[in-house]
Image (cartoon, rainbow, N blue to C red; front, side, top):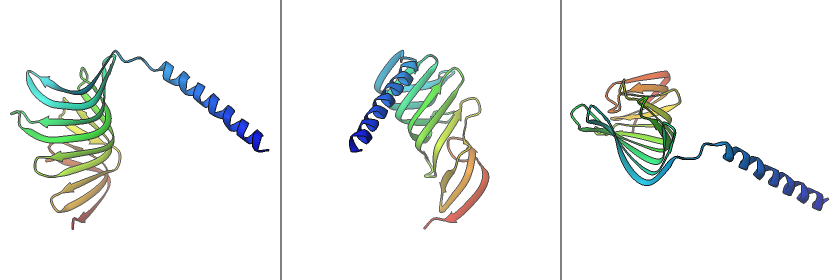
Length: 168
């Protein structure tokens, strides 16, 4: 009985590995990869964001970033906030960036935002999420189902149910 059980586990493990190889073989190969890199996204020679990443992979028009930090700048070139995330991607031609994982946005005023997904749209200079977020603003902790905000976290629209509490 034990041998049959062990044989069954071994067969399932091998077939699972073969299936995993089929999936990974269907993903497009990276055109370029780089490690420990810094790059800027500019508009009219004005830097909007600076991205620092431990790993970058380019596939078609999409740049995938891993373990990265983004610095946001205002119209005068002053830093307004920093975003830290596990992974994400940038499509420069469309002016969008999406971040996933453990995300933190920290503004220069000390306010911070925590989320699991976040998107930035260059044309609107807007970050947003439709997933639960936690905002730490002055002495308040605010939880919401989503939000829209400028990267400096000055103008914020909270979405869905909103809960607030005093920070102690």
